[in-house]
Image (cartoon, rainbow, N blue to C red):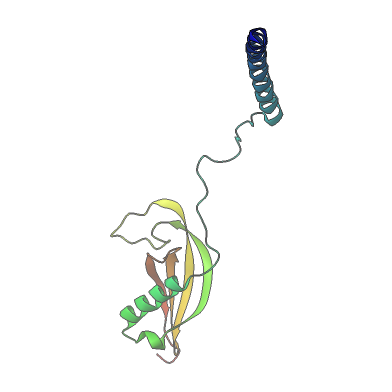
Length: 147
């Protein structure tokens, strides 16, 4: 019996020594196959480094409420008497929304936003906003024909 046990131990040791290098070779071969099959993609040189400015194509109610509130404060009319009659997406040329004044400096950059018409009776106001509605500027007031 001692002969069998010694022989079994020797066989197990031999199999371990043979199997370990096989596993290493298989792992290296598999890694090489993946490396050459998947490959490395070259960097795209046609794209800009920075992602484009997000432009919203859907008008949010938050922006609409902000403009109505602003128009109400400016005109002294109740917000319930004002309504938005036209909304157009617009990209402004600067952070002043294209309405520079002598009090501030405007940075030249594309600013996505909205041009919004608000109406009360015959009175109409045109507003400009950025995409989030955090900047609201009166573009012009169109008086009623009777005034």
